[in-house]
Image (cartoon, rainbow, N blue to C red):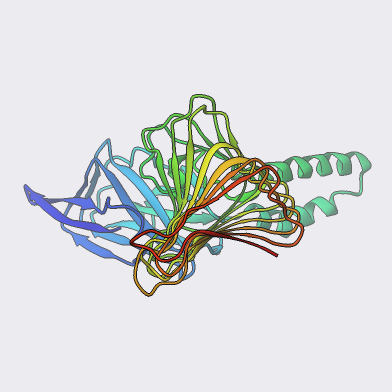
Length: 394
């Protein structure tokens, strides 16, 4: 867990104010020691690096959880952990049990982040620690003992049919297991934090769907790669801005199913963040569509990294507005780009290519891709820029 630097002492018991500044800091392995600990009533971030199986940890002589304290789990990397692996979140050196639980992490609760499912226990290790245990995944459960036992039981036709039916139902559950709805009161704006969704799982997977309704947090950041079937904005949903990556990270968002469905009646924004070295990307594949009343901005920023939006296969820009920006700094050549490849179509979209320093925003049409009924605008250079927006057709 990451300390915000405010360790307040009252009657010899320390109050821990964990880091609530967001999930951009990926440093993992912070260890803090306290002589008595009371968690604050705010969101308290715990980071776990799944690639290194390393996590934050608190060691305290006595622990009390405030009733309003929230547990914010952040996964760094996207690797599958070994089932049965136990992470000690809070090691309680006192002989007494932990008093209270995090409001969103009751005893025995489970949540899924990316490829891993965790179960919480306040009676872990020596009986009074907060631990997270990695549970077996759907795949390992079926491809190991469960599936083998099912095959062995198929000597009876009736049993065989029943087992196959159960297997198919379970497979369907697995396909849609990572679909979820953004919460009314999420703990942060991070897409990749499971407890920001209902159910508590990160929407990720070609058959999954992310649904957005009314929420008090409408700026949503994608901090790790996501491949999803559809993004749906319900009727009356809030106006969202969904940003892929940051100025110094590389993140991709792939939409491979129906695409973006906007029933909200308000404009929905998607931004590919530009910056010093980022190459944030967004892909529409298959027959995915970009939707109506949607805006996609490929931002170049003041850096040498480019951002690009690709429509591939038979995907469509639909009725979206697509904006490509040129870089704003001197000596920087990469800009925001949008590509239409194979049989993709710009359909009825409006595409705006803006000028920049040394390079402007640009739209590319390759293979059999068509502009169809789209409106393409290339804004010319200005006093502060020397390259206008452009289109290239091959």
